[in-house]
Image 1 (cartoon, rainbow, N blue to C red):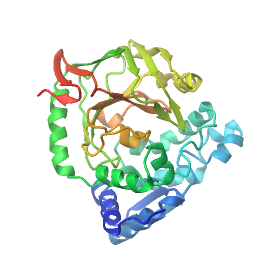
Image 2: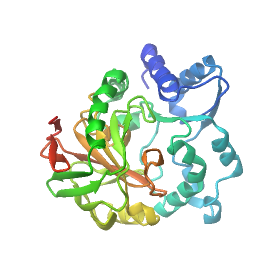
Image 3: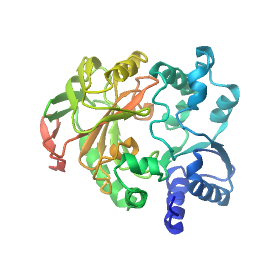
Length: 361
């Protein structure tokens, strides 16, 4: 791999440690990472040390779970988190996850049922993070695999990553607060595009403006819609839906009274169906997000980036966000990106607020 510019690496680590999780003296900071991320991991640990906190490193081949073990372990073991792992999550003050895959398809041969069991086992211990009671951030380090998925060389992907991360977060946060103010005032949101006419309620729900927050890159405004309200159809015909090493093309979902009652796809449809059958909450809309990052303009088959593409929205089936009113619970949280730049519209209570990815207010 080519070396990264140290100044950019240091600034990236500073954003993670200071802006995203704001590490405090004496904290126990869990750093979960993959071996190829070593340059960023070491810089993050240096900066944690300078803040007078503990850096607790756990290296894993695959952040979703060790695939060799998940394939072979008895289901009874998968369904229960080991006491050491549970203690670590329960006692960490914050968590930083750094993904640097050698192969982005790692784990794609694990049955969705087993992935769901593992996720269910860890959910009670990770819930303080997802509920916003403990700070956390997930990020990535450039690797050949990520670059290849994006259709880029490694140097091109490095430039892309830094263009999405090293931006004026204060300015973007002000812009996103204006968007959140409009949607906070809305009762019903409608998404209209080719093959898509979907409505849901935001009544009583407020959005989260994500600048330098739980994801880096960030740049989104997101909500947990009223769980029983989603009605209509949505067609994700622009980009594949990426999850657990799978790329599911042409996903189409139909909702009635808040639940998916029909689902199809042009490829890997069996994986789609099995994932939606993971548990009772997997067929509920857990999140509606609005992409706002001006440094991300192209699809890269990398959800951390793609859900922030300026001019897109994303819908996540499964687990909602308790910190913003979501009550749906599921082992699944699958973000699927819908591009509105080529003919889509967003409405708030019948008023057109975005068309072709351009705001109208």
